[in-house]
Length: 335
Length: 288
Image 1: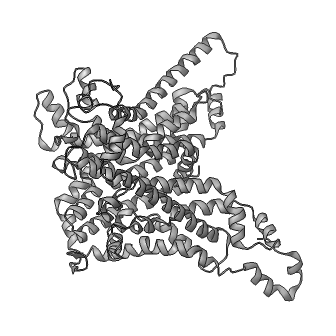
Image 2 (image 1 turned 180 degrees about the horizontal axis):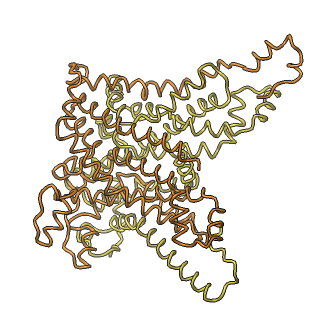
Image 3 (image 1 turned 45 degrees about the horizontal axis):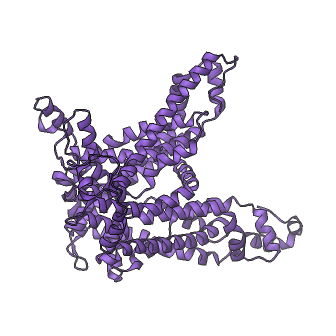
């Protein structure tokens, strides 16, 4: 804070000067008012209203109080947990691949001799920017069982066509059937439809991970590599012992963001289900992640109370990851 | 950051090794770029094929380039021009709204002294952690009770303030030197004039980033728009297309032509402003 030396030199004006130095500007409230009204009305108050709705059932404006019944129903019934398992499977089908590919391409782009880095980065990032509805329609067409590019490609290398988005059977089950083995139902694995959706997600999210990893790589001080190289390290050793550990905070951030992204995934599942003429949730509900399940309860079944309870449970899971992210990143970011 | 810094003089063999290594890396990068781009190519080529050719899917390129598909898509997809206009209108209003409310609020939080400032700012930050899903249903009920269903208000008003944009702009405004402000005050400048004549022009990068994020989020939003639009003529383009897929007798080449038209504005905006966008993601992403 800048203090006027002339003022503070005169003792009896101190009270005035400290007051003027704080300069309370009441007009500030007018500046924040427009934003605050909207945020309070549509983002803060609704949270409390949601807690209320989640404890009621029935049509809008004719709510009947049911207390924690919806939560009990969700947590003791199979559907909620089924969706959570699907979300988890979907996360495992997408995140490891997106992160591995993202780090791989980011590391290649990071090599100092690479020209046109900006152009490559912009191309890799394009799928992330283009509207999900549009790109999902395109992918549903690529994965079309009769006329799709994917099956044409499989055919050209001598593989049988797949049913992709309309196939409810588990991928392990399909593989086992292919080699003539029967495996128990629980080992069937995620449905082919979910795998097909995951391929889309990997395609879409890879560019995001590349951009984040590239930023993380640029933040690693070059002297560390220099020092390690003087000590005789090179290639893989540098990557393994400098890049990987120093990228840990970035990787952690990407993991958390990906998990939250999976929990919230909706647009592409909704669109691809529709584009392959399935009801919301895919063949036998096998692509019904938590958000899809919540929306189905809301939109298809008009269960406002129950859907809100599911939304709150979903949000608590997301919140736990967010807080974990803040806490952990806060510690790890300073090395 | 010189990764290829070798101390001894380079021999021809070293150069050859480096060159072949570099070619391999370029080859992999190009493969990756093709992987990112091929669905768009397939979309455009399929959208230019005839009906039977599109479904036969035997060739990559169309044998006859039917640019008329685009005219058909524009005319035959019911309300398609309307969807397009709706989305542009909604996006422009939302971006203008977000930039106005966020600039004002961010300025107050960055530059003004008032009781409760820090508390109010922390509350704002906390709202960024609330997942969209939890406020979805209460907001839907609120909007319904306000009779905003099938009204642009429902698609615009709830989104014209953004805690994220306020946060982004506040960080930027804080980096503007205090001396500029002191000098302006001596010249008799008010806060509002200082904001509009000095802070806003200086903050173009942050404003572009924030506007771009808002534009893309609005253009691509789906779930909320499905809930608050019933009449076809009120739908934004994403909802319109999602509805169009489900309609019986939808021809794929027309659908893909419609998709191509719908993604073109986003691609144009992205290509012009991609530097701000990617750098915005990288900075915000890293900060969490």
